[in-house]
Image (cartoon, rainbow, N blue to C red):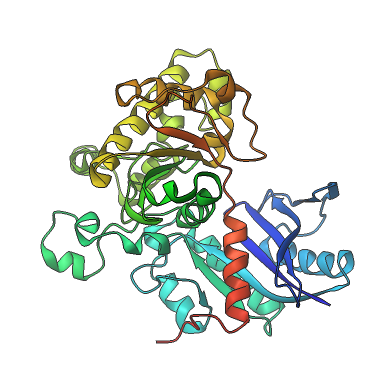
Length: 403
């Protein structure tokens, strides 16, 4: 029988999953299916598909919580793939703090530490950990692996991690970590397939989606990134503000009476594309809208991508390749066009037909042959990165999470 692992990305209202198998002889990893639960905690909708189409799509008429969803998933996997032996679970964990520079087997000590990081990623970390706790109760004998969005950025030099605060704060862990590391890891591992040794040069990856960031990569390793201690910093996002003058927060607190919770709700849930447009935090909806505010929100987003790109170029001391990825980066050709139109001073030249016709089924170069900087779109795959790390660890890999 083939070994299998489930990868999970647990959010506030959804659980995304993917099922991978590995042949015992070749160790080749294959995606069997993927899907998600949506609607938590009001309803529970389950969908799953493989390369050939839908496997199941239904409403589950039970209490819409993690317990119901994951219990249903385990039973469904056993019935749908009876030839498999489920060996482990792999979890996307947004924040690994200073302790975890690579994936680890989850223990109670690991969980206790990760829970202390929840205030730094309030939209993600508590829900990531809830998925782990639920599976501990449902299937206590199977190992669970934590794979971190922060790990990829631990190669950033010290100067790239500092805030200009008194030094004791850095020693307490108040520093830039960066996120979307699983996506950046996938791109850094995949890019050589398309450009060969040029992938070791100066690369900027723009992971643009509801959450958005950018990363400067050299020698296939992170050198700098736009996010910081939390996933609020850098680019504007669906509902998150991105860069903001900290004096604005002091003013809102001291003069307008905003509480810490009100500030958190404003910065995490009411700002970004949603706040600017007053229409939606979804780029697809904004691109279809005729609202002037929606247009301004799109233009602001693209403007900030260009500004952040120039900043990352300074860290790289030049630029050879731009890669777009993520939900917006892969699907919104108009955003790619607007960003690159503002980079003509760098001799960036898109092939407009290739850009507009791109579909995120495979990687493609969308810049013209005359462009001084190559521009690519590469669909990301965070799940395969998680699955690979899980298989390595359960086969006696590199880190057991003990200290």
